[in-house]
Amino acid sequence: MKRVLREWNLEFNQLLVLVAIGAFIGWAVGYPGWGIALVTSSYSVWMLVRSRELLRWLRGNADAEIPEGSGLWGAIFDNLYQQRKLQRQQVQQLQTIIARAQQSTNAITDAVIVVNHHGELEWWNQAGSSLLGLQTKTDSGQPITNLVRDPRFVRYFTRGQFESPLEIPSSRRQGTMLQFQITTFGEGDRLIVVRDVTRLHNLEQMRKDFVANVSHELRTPLTVIKGYLETFLDMLGPDNAPLKRGLSQMQQQALRMELLVNDLLLLSRLETENTTQPLKPVAVAKLLRQVYNDALAINDDKQHRIHLDADDNLQIYGDENELRSAFSNLVVNAVKYTPEQGEIHIRWWADADGAHMAVTDNGIGIDAKHIPRLTERFYRADPSRHIKTGGTGLGLAIVKHVLIHHGANLLIDSTLGKGSTFTCHFPGKTIVSQATPRSAAG
Image 1 (tube, one colour):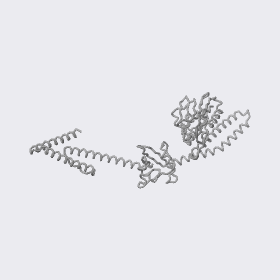
Image 2 (tube, rainbow, N blue to C red):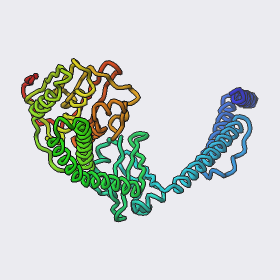
Image 3 (tube, rainbow, N blue to C red):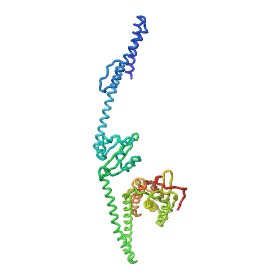
């Protein structure tokens, strides 16, 4: 800044000297004004010439030699030259970084695709060409939904909810399963990562098939074992107390195995069945009264105070059998894990966020560290509880999959030693109708 001021002062002083000389020469010939005008006009012409040279250099080749200059113009040319040189270095550095980024993304097997806020393709790596068949000459600038036309992807892309990835079969490679994960960045731009998950998909399918087949095959021998145990127990008299006790324990374990097999079959069906089948209106209040009566039937020993508050006029689209299974699991868990003389509240209501079913108890509660994993199959926060209660460890996994089928989600709020609340949130679009609320208290 000081150098610029110094050069400007020098240029201004030179102009003053030239004006003074022009005025003196003009005074000597009797026309001082003409002398000043001649000097200033010559100076202006010189300035225009230097400006034209500067403009020509700025518009010309970046590698062209900078014009020569002195004084203020020399400082201007020198500063512009340094700035252009620095800019050229920065551009080269950015080009190097971009080139390395492209090389690194081309080296990975996952497809990386950049889509602008209009949904048009801007860039993709080599895996994008191999997995999706994208071609640089014809597909650049095209909407991604014109090239990946699977209706499930189109809905996933246009909906804009990318919390969970989407898995769909490849249209180019038969038997190949692709997973799409989309991340939003910038001003509505999207980064799409596509990976081949065929192996994981096949392994998961093998696991599901294995569980379903084994569970199905176990039903027949379990039925035979239960039948013979019941027969033997009926045949034994009071003199065979030790044998009767052993057979009774065997019968209890057979019943527990039957519950486990039934839950495995239900979970397998929920994981594999077609979720696009149409849902029908379900009178949830009526369904909850059935669940409430079942809970009263198994509540003789603990004498819980169970309350039901349900809106009779609130219905949702769903599968009645699946909803009964989910709600029954939540209520039965509350009965099992709430100490004697405890309270359990079952509630069904709607608000601006949708419809909700909540089961609240003042039982033993759950440690916060276990809550994120409670819906995993066979996960046990406290294995000793399940031994006492006879739980299979699949109840909350069934609840989770039922809610996924209905576009709903499960919220768990629990405090160790104070109780728990399990709330099923159904989106507003699932509500059939809601007239004047009316309580159906139990």
